[in-house]
Amino acid sequence: MKHLLTLFSAVLLASAVHAQTPVTVSTQAGNAQQVWYSLQNGEVGSAALAEWDLAFEMTGFSSSIRVNTAKGLVVYETPSAIGAWDAVNSVDTANWIRVDNADTSWSVSALNNGNNLQDPDGFNVGWGNYNVVTHVITGAKIYVIALADGTTWKKLRINSLANGVYSFTYANLDGSGNFDAELLKSDFTGKNFGYWSFSTNGTLDREPLTAVWDLLFTKYTGFVPTPYPVSGVLQNKGVTALQVDNVPTADAEWTSGPLLTEMNIIGSDWKAYDFDLNQYTIAADRTYFVKDLPGNIWKIVLTAYGGSSTGDMSFNQELVSAVGIGESRAQKGTLLAFPNPVTNGQAQFMVDVPEQNGTLRVLNLSGQQMMEQQWTGLNGLVTKSLDVSGLARGMYILRFDSPNSGTTGKLMID
Image 1 (cartoon, rainbow, N blue to C red):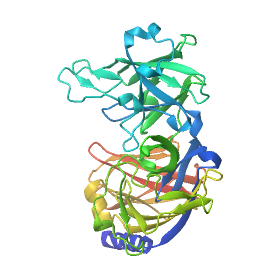
Image 2 (tube, rainbow, N blue to C red; image 1 turned 90 degrees about the vertical axis):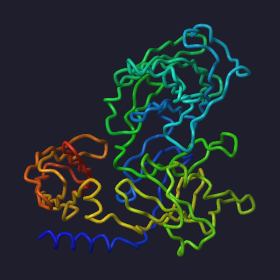
Image 3 (cartoon, helix red, strand yellow; image 1 turned 135 degrees about the vertical axis):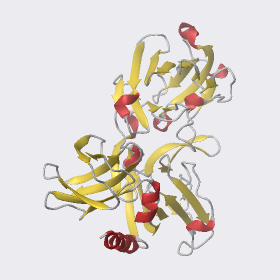
Image 4 (cartoon, rainbow, N blue to C red; image 1 turned 90 degrees about the horizontal axis):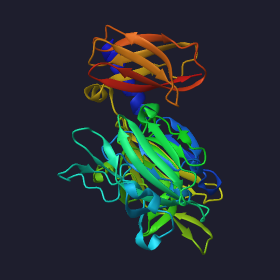
């Protein structure tokens, strides 16, 4: 039985490799939408770019706090210590430092400017200092943010990050509208960032689970070399990529160089505006290879950009190296639904995990748990079944957790 299932999976993977698929992802007119994309499953979420102002990192020691400069916010770091809150009350850009989010790493943000993780007195993350005894990051700086309207200014201080809670304060520059806020990491479990809106004085849960997407199609601030709004494609944490130039796309090989961790390997420079033609042109003989979170290698060739009038980004994608059952099992196990999609309300699974017992969870694309089932007797490659007749049609994420390992999969209900 095990050999038959392994052969069955190998045939499925082989049939998928080298199948080229044309795709268009639309960020809408004015690049107003951010779109999260899975190379295996297509679009898994979208949200309005302008709805958020601050993004707080959920994992990563740097505790990155990004500012939405893509919608026109401009961030300045003042020389004032956090205790001089009332004294920062008028525009003084001559004595402030403009700071921007990095376009190469999600964990390097405008508010991480000046960090020093080698500080012998405690790790400096930019906006504050980490105490190795209390495990609390205490804020140290005051920031000023110019809003997109060009006339409104807000001052901001991050008070602390303690016990998984970001505490921060913001106000108008004259001190009016003072607001003390908190954002709890536990409200955004399994995601890269939790978001905050100045206009609503509240949190936003707007991005899919980290485990379900590979690429973000969005407008963001790039550096050419000064900060400038661009539109393009950014990689998720844990997704690596390679750019191959000056080789016909049909001949490009993903083994020709190292896969890199910078999130803007695809970025925005695959296109350029031709003023004579009054349209965008695409870089010739340029190929990208992307290693997704499960470990598959995809070939990406950008083919068109509709400009800000449509926000459409078109490309061809092709699976050129698939993770097989043996390779997956060595890494974290295998969880495969069949048939997929499920049409009769009864899902069957091939399971191969290095554990005897564990918990299967079925999540929707927003990360909400829809079902849970305890599994036992998981000795080698086995089959399990699950009644999913109570679930609505659509895509779901499978997550199997055990004390020492875990794996994920996908389930489509038709």
